[in-house]
Length: 380
Image (cartoon, rainbow, N blue to C red; front, side, top):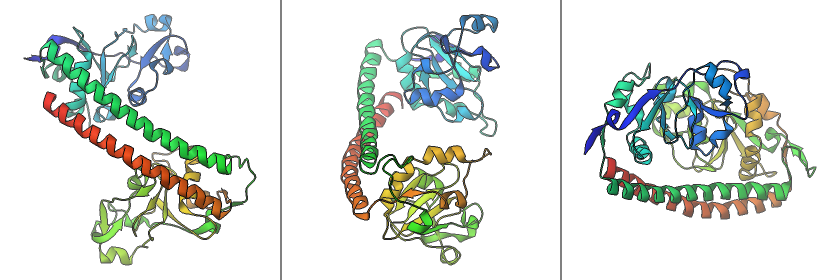
């Protein structure tokens, strides 16, 4: 039976956030802001975000929202992300978030509903994104029988737990590689084993792409059979880049440099110091730096060396609308340079773990397909 959301839940929004650090404490009641949604969905404990005391809550007349309240952004660019979070306990909520408090115990059912029908579909103008509370309240929800809802929730929770376990396995395998790196070469940040250090230009060919080769700057160069790698494709590729979206024409290739298979790509804008390795010859813009190792090192070793420095380099980047680091910073970095046979032994270990990761990822993909098909069946 279809029902309007406003008939089965109280629809509202949070209140304005108290201004000033003095209004927040470590022992109080959580105050959820729009910026907290992603980290909470990623597993952060709600008690580890900013909190307010009872005195501050009374002074600012903050409402306390009960456990089971569904939150998602209703204004600003955050509402374009479609994050949906269910309060695991009582909390205060900022005014940018919509608060859906069900009349009955149907929070989990509605969470799955909104994870399929993302609330950002209610945004009418993406230039000035917002979602009206009246539009939220007038959503028609297919409220199946209690028995059907219980069955659906049990099935979807079970699949969610399998997906979570597979994701944890992938993270643990990544941690295992980093642990092996430290075991073999010590802490790379402090160079705890006192290994020889060299710069990237000393360890191989080192260079940057060209700004005009960004698709938005030179669309006439696009189209053809020559791969063009973008910053996001490097940042999201894990160890190896196996796919790409844009290509160059013959004209584009003449005005660019084709980096060979095996080149380590390093991002210097947006997602700073993310690295991955080309599995094909490709060009890239000036937001990406290429590194092709010589006989003193190899790209897999340098890739994992960068994983220890990514946060450090990001912190060094000057504050701006889009953070970036320059070629000078990268070229002056001191990279540990252990014996090449040790680096190759580490590379062999990485390849072994990668084979395990492929199997786990395949299982994860199959489970996600099952999840998507059931969500379509129940909420489509």
